[in-house]
Amino acid sequence: MRTILFYLFSIWELVTNTIFNMKKATKWKNEGNKEELDKFFVNKIYHKAIRRILNVSGVVLEVEGIENVPVDGPLVLISNHQGNFDVIALVASINRRVGFIVKKELRDMPFLGSWVENMGSLFIDRGNIRQSAQIVVEAIDYINAGNAIMIFPEGTRSKSDIVGEFKSGSFKIATKAGANIVPVSISGSYKVMEANNGKVKSGKIKIKYHKVIQTKDMNREDVNEIHNTVKEIIIKGLKEQLQRTITKNKEDSII
Image (cartoon, rainbow, N blue to C red):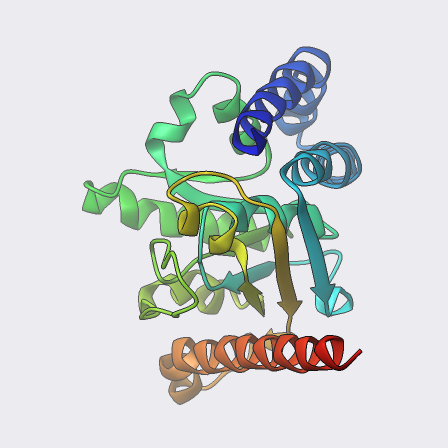
């Protein structure tokens, strides 16, 4: 029943927001009105529509370190990727509009494609090496304009609490743009859908935004190791989240 509610309510939010708000969002994007577009997505979409979807799904967010996310300026957020609910949870918790690098097929999806594009996302053809290289250039320009992008350097969902290999190429966007990096640890998201054979189950998703890493004046050695550095930070955050959960469960059992 919860799965049906999730899909029905998600479609409802998508369609109604498209009918009443898409023209405004597209107008601001075409005009380059970043300020209005940012406020609209954070206040109207992320913190209202998306949070309503999470509420219907029975998902509770536990967010730590949101003060570490700069509210403006070039930014790349780097997160581990457990499941489909990662994007929903992350945008519902963030304090600024953030785009993603997504597969090109999403552009043609009714309603959703336009919203993903207006968020500031870039569409990649994974089978086209030349286009993939061009996306890196476009992403650097986009970030240099003061925007934010979220990257999942594992490249795919782990569907577990295991963190896969971080592709070093994913970090070129940040280092070449001289942008700030905020590592993000997210846990529990795969338990909402992937652990239940695609069915939505209520649960808690924990998100930790770590302190900013500045890449502008980074030396070559640090640039070459940035993917390992960020991965270590994210894994440490996941371990801390797990330890707090274990401690809380023990305390609750005593009570």
